[in-house]
Amino acid sequence: MTFELEAEVPERGVELALRVAPGETVALLGPNGAGKSTALAVAAGLLRPDRGRVALDARPLTVTGGGGQRASYVPPHARRIALLAQDPLLFPHLDVRANVEFAPRAQGAGRAAAREAAERWLTTVGVADLADRRPGELSGGQAQRVALARALAADPLLLLLDEPMAALDVAVTPAVRQVLRTVLAGRSALLVTHDVLDALLLADRVVVLEDGRVVEEGPTSEVLSRPRSAFAARIAGLNILTGTWRGGRVHCEDGSVVAGMSSDPAPSDGARAVAVFSPGAVSVYRDAPGGSPRTVLRAQVTEIEPHGDRIRIRTTRAAADVTPQAAAELDLAPGAEVLLSVKATEITVYPA
Amino acid sequence: MRRTGSEGGVPRWILLPAAAGAAFVLLPLLAIVLQVDWRAFPALVTSEASRDALLLSLRTSTASTLLCVLLGVPMAVALARTRFPGQSLLRALVLLPLVLPPVVGGIALLYTFGRRGLLGETLEVVGLEVAFSTAAVVMAQTFVALPFLVVSLEGALRTAGHRYEVVAASLGARPTTVFRRVTLPLVLPGLLSGSVLAFARALGEFGATITFAGSLQGTTRTLPLEIYLRRETDADAAVALSLVLVVVAVVVIGTAGQGRVRR
Image (cartoon, rainbow over all chains, first blue to last red; front, side, top):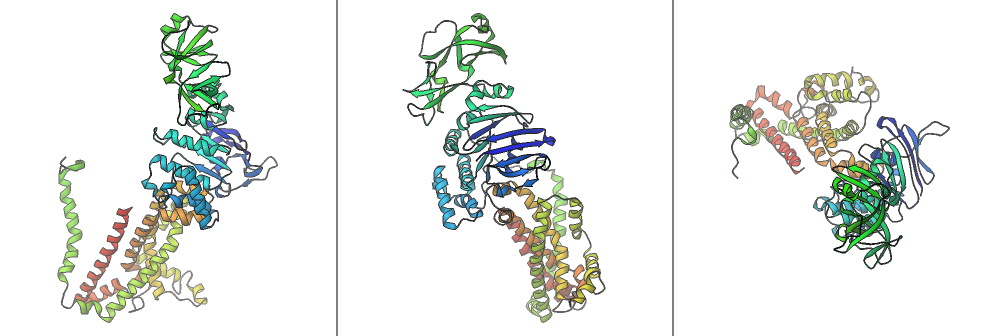
């Protein structure tokens, strides 16, 4: 199911084109007011662009007239595009099961079939035991899982996720993210997020919007590790190393080995994994440091730029934030050979 | 922690006029209760004319409340959920009966549906004559009660917002399904309290009714009309029937208030 969207909404300064390949999850990143919500609203059929075209697998959903095209518009309920918002918005007058049964019932399924679908999706998202609860009796994380089950029960061809974890407690975010990871695998989805980890762990591809335009797009790890747009650079910030998880360490292609704390659940042995750490956790040396066991990466300085009251050193492997004094003492300049050292406790390893 | 008397920073002197206002509303009710001839009360309220009036009032008020729901729910939805040119003007006009003297409403109805009215002749051709019939009572009551339902339901719709409806549509529900399974259940408390208010307003209707429907015992003479007419000849009966209306009104408002609290 290829999803294509081209939209011009001059009123909001938006002019963009997006594409979601079959089974692909695309993350939409960008500052507030960049046009992310507008893109979702156009996709869902809640907003008609002044000029544009939305199509799902060659079936036109929104076509504005002109240019030899006949104008057409499919209303939201007939698009087979489901929406999961920041707020779960469970229907307060229905219990959890009835909420999930809503879509199958609305689409004409019988009682038994709807019930079976509700059971299945609630089990998938891990809240089957809450089926008889009222939405008011759920925690934020539980409610968002139910909302996800409800959206999936609609059997959408495309799933729109509008910052699905922004309103959640930090403590439950990883578990919900893991559920999303499971259900988004092989599913076409468009995910609006502010969180670089969401993009990294859930998306195959990243599209960065600024001022209503697409300023950068590409495979997630590429965009995040070598950001070209200002926004991607700012949010990326984090260092990302990819490799294979073996013996509790990430083995990178260039032979370096990264030791870190594995996320829950841990990657399986031999599987692809990403090691994530912040530039602030990186120490820079000219000569091999002694002391506690650390990950040490050999790298070459590529750029040096101010970053708040620190200096950000970009290298061929990872970025490091050091004090101006340290930068001066180390005599750092582009081209300098350095050793980057990171404590294992500062590195988190996720399945990729 | 002890709550202080001046909670929320309300100046103490404000309680005095507030108490005076409450007394102004409650004292007349007390006066009615004191005036009632309790020994004659059962006979007075069960006389044939009284029973006719009470039953007619209950029947017509129920009918007009149903009519208010049938017409008012779509009106409130159209006002709260759609946008069209002239909408705010239309809203103001629809709410006009709230502030219009009911007698004026009755005259307006008469010149619309009366024999010489705008639609009167057309109706006569089809064999319908509404003026001075029970149907006219229901129409007069609906005319004055409808804005109560529209206002309270439109408020409930705006408070509920349309985010749930957007989600329901994205789950594949057609507009009619969304209306039936999401919109209506969400505003049910507002609909109930609006209906109760409309019922209470219909029950107390006097001016529009006497102007448009007249005062025929058993056909158009509702309880308020009966009370007004009896006042001249049989003051005790008027007082007894007034108490009946007060009691019904208190029960109705109590029910509505409860609905709001539960929300």
